[in-house]
Image (tube, rainbow, N blue to C red; front, side, top):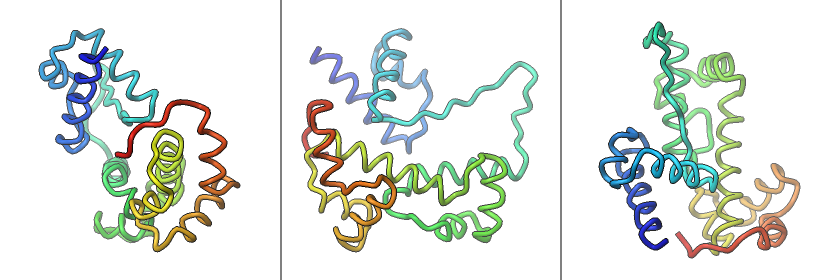
Length: 183
């Protein structure tokens, strides 16, 4: 069991070090796990919301080139994965991509079915929920990690999305599983 936990930590470290983009083969070699063992491990990490996955699927006759809109949407998603904890404004992502906020919103909505604002909100709330459920990190520290100006603003933001305060949310889900040590 302890050996599996260490291999899980190795895999998580490799994913973080690689800028959140790593091949299955690389993980296989680094952990020494078989295909089935590594698949199971990745499935568990994904199920526990400890990693997000994006699968690059190519069929035999698929063109690997993307339209400029698809490429922009994909680049937005990559930036979002890297910055959603600190940046919640579409203008930030548009600036990084050298396009206007309006154009980014139009393109991302067309290719993903959700606006950049929805993507940012969903990713932020998903991660906050995980931290409230599975860690002992204080609400004040979570607010700080997500770049909120203060705990009050954080509480209002969370309540507007979930209909309940972060404290009540944590209390409601504290029985759903063991808490992990602060990250």
